[in-house]
Length: 203
Image 1 (spheres, rainbow, N blue to C red):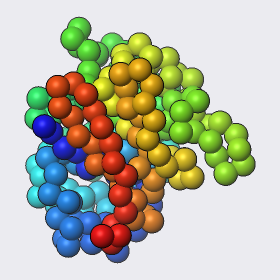
Image 2: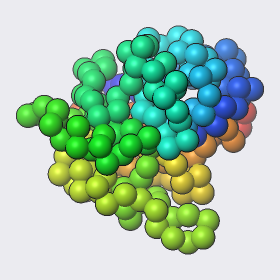
Image 3: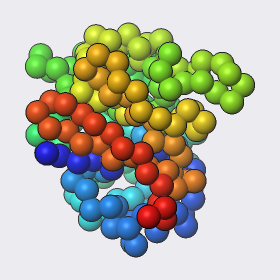
Image 4: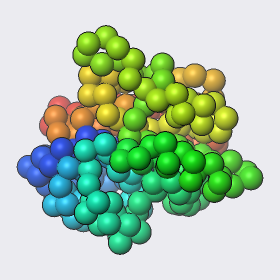
């Protein structure tokens, strides 16, 4: 079984990011997945200190070119790309330019498919309801995930739509914003993904 720490929406909260890395040891899991909104390069540098060398990330809609460059230079950026991490094929849709990221990714999907899709935004209709009650997920992501049918689709962006849903063979996870201490643990075994939500300091 492989276990992933899924975090999102860090929003330059250095205090909680340092706590996660230095005190919680990034929870000691196999892979660390970050689905965007770092907001400052300091948190990128801190996340890269996680004991696991298996880190993969996409940008968020509030991230800037400096953050993208830092992730790219570290070899962990998945925007519009597929990466293999501990035998899992992961594909990423960045939040800075999701439409272009989807187009780039469509040309790079291996014939055997992928295990996990990462994006900052949710797909339309799944864990995408804003505080105003509107659906803010992206149709192009829904079409992509429907086509690929990964074991898991991991994303963030809509802070108030934290949760886990299963549709078909795919588990959809919004861990909630790490800036408030929220995270998720994803377990994969035999092509089946399961997710548990957590909060730092809650036990």
